[in-house]
Image 1: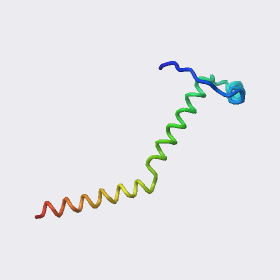
Image 2: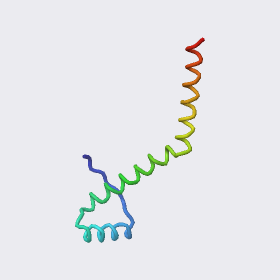
Image 3: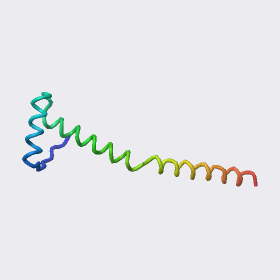
Image 4: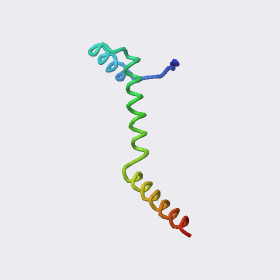
Length: 72
């Protein structure tokens, strides 16, 4: 694990302190969890259901073309 520094708005730090006190989870663990949630959301948004359907359709089409080529 590597250390980084970041700047938070006063209100963000205040709320982070509050959540940390209430949950007894260290602020660093809460920040790491928040980063994990954002990264997961970005990954999920990159491959939407529509994009997955388009990819699947292209793969089916490619498969059909390869079968036709193999027969000739």
